View: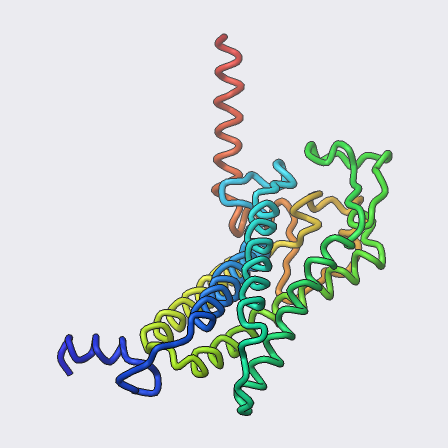
Length: 274
């Protein structure tokens, strides 16, 4: 097959039909849902899972870096908004009664529901709390009570459901999008691009998991000190790790910690010379 033939094959719809003109609502529905469930929401999950401690952050001397939190909120909010728009564009237009179309609609509504449940769950997750001096690694006896710091039942239920529902929804979305592409008789290149994208996401997640970037949220915020109540409870979620200062330096924090130490030394030296 020549390059021209291969390009023509990629541009052709999945059915191989020579003529295919999808309806306008189908195009915008597909664009919105793919942008939401294949790009924005999966990236938001990866940011939240693997970047609670940022590269170059000298954890546990530097705590509660909110970069991951800001990006998680931005990506998930944009994803849910686009998902809602995509759902709206299809309402009143989808009349296909075939088995695949009915399954796509049923699972699609499941995803829409799960997306909004995640939003509502996040709003109702409870208070944060924590020591006022947590940035300086001081386990203050005047710690502010909070659902997260105390890891109350409310907070633990939130974490269980948020992680399970979020991960399940993103994985389910792969199948729902595949059904949508078949129903729309999308061009083959779209399937190829999405397949490469999902494989790339899976490989990045596997790499970050293997190098130990999936650190416990509680430790990322308040550090590994056992005086913090959450550190004395079982970790929530599969593959989530906890570290001591020493074990973190041996794994992925050694360079960051060394850089922080050198920067601090340079700062002290500069202050001393002035």
